[in-house]
Image 1 (tube, rainbow, N blue to C red):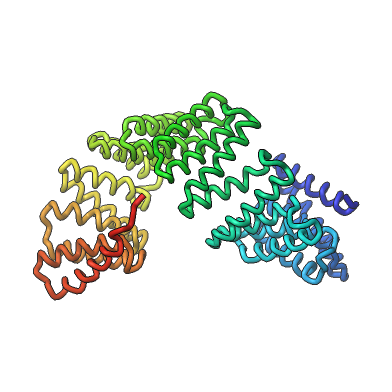
Image 2: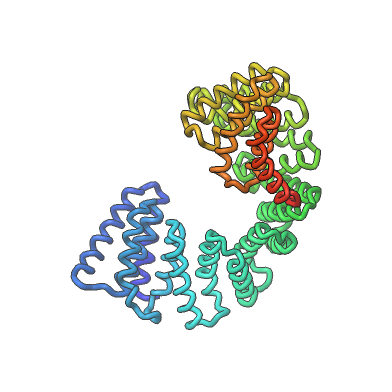
Length: 471
């Protein structure tokens, strides 16, 4: 390591230490002092790799303290210096690697891709196409291309990274976890669940060999494998893996049981149990989530609302609408207390409550709550917004059973249709469902001329979605 690299490493270590010890302002002061010094040198005409390297470390420092706006300015300065530099300049490769990561964090994906491509080309020429130094920029490119939806290229990059690491570190190296995990998740999105399953099995085997089957890392690998099993339709195998993973985490004390990741695992498992008809088991998990959250945050914390809604949905699925109503009223009280009675957040438990009251045959009460939710959403989101369309759809169902005028109901459904056409497109499945309701009321009202073109459109959409398989 050269003297300048040693000095820069010491500077970055000092900044990190200040941040970790809570001295953020001192860290900013140190960064600012060094920035002013390098800026003075650059104004005097010094614009070489040494200045670029200093700016690089300063950008990393400002990134660490959260001063993202200034990071952009520093990256622009670095580009001014390195654009004209030859690829064989010392320090250039490490600077480019850092820049690729920072651009990605800032959401400037095109710049990140260009930088990572340049550094990959440099490193390939210097070290060969199978060098382990290529892993970081290749993973950077995979992240950017994945965000752009170029999944085929990303799969190829992940496979290349895995091949490089297998050659240099061995087939059971822990370094393989990141690309295998990225590859597995991507393959699930592409509908290749079996290939994804193979990636997650490898991850589980690596963690099990290194740390044992009762380690928390193995447990999280089980959850990823469960996801793949579920995508393949093997729900019972997925349930067994989730249960085993949760038990391993509990027995190993790998993470606190109130950690949000563990909570999400319980909710995922509960949802899966409901899907396969094991609602009672799923409900027990949801009750456990609620009890843990209550113990940690208190009974009036707004974060409990999600747990109440999940439990209410579980009871509704089991046709226990009385218990669902009780839970929904509790969630509504908490939300109103936390956010105020006119905040749009209250409309979520309100509409769930309206539906539950509808099932309890308390239609007038259900209508009043749905109307109130609709009014709040119209004020908050606008009369042609998707949340308003959802509230209107709920209201129409209730008012239909109340025997409201068919002409009035038709106008409301037309409004729902216009909203969904705007939000989802005229060829969407949501529009098909709304269209079906509009056609029904046009028929009842004898409006044949208006019904005919919509009926033809509905028939075409039905044919389009007839063979669509829902998962």
